[in-house]
Amino acid sequence: MIVRIMGEGQVEMADGHFTELNRLDDELLAEMQRGDEEGFRRTLGALLEAVRRLGEPLPDEALEPSELILPGPDAGLDEVRAMLADDGLIPG
Image 1 (cartoon, rainbow, N blue to C red):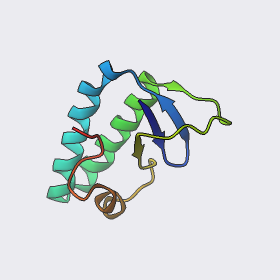
Image 2 (cartoon, rainbow, N blue to C red; image 1 turned 90 degrees about the vertical axis):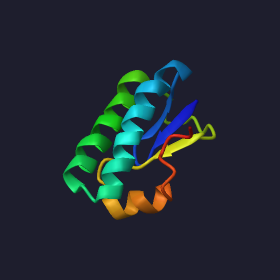
Image 3 (tube, one colour; image 1 turned 30 degrees about the vertical axis):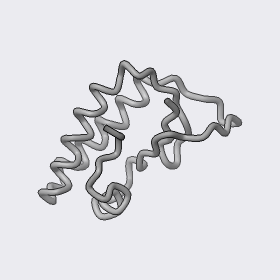
């Protein structure tokens, strides 16, 4: 699966990594619903770090269709809330 981090680029993720990413996504969604800004920042950072660590970066010139788009590390709670529409970042 191709994942784009807004403002950074694309990475290719193996399907086997989605258990960890889904766990972080569930935490992020719960923190957003509670309005927990500190928890949201921490979990968004962990989610993006996991994608960077587990994924294989695509070359900058590659323009593959992204199956998943994640907000950048500076995205605000309200901005991400609008992206999610309470469905989570990672398709279940």
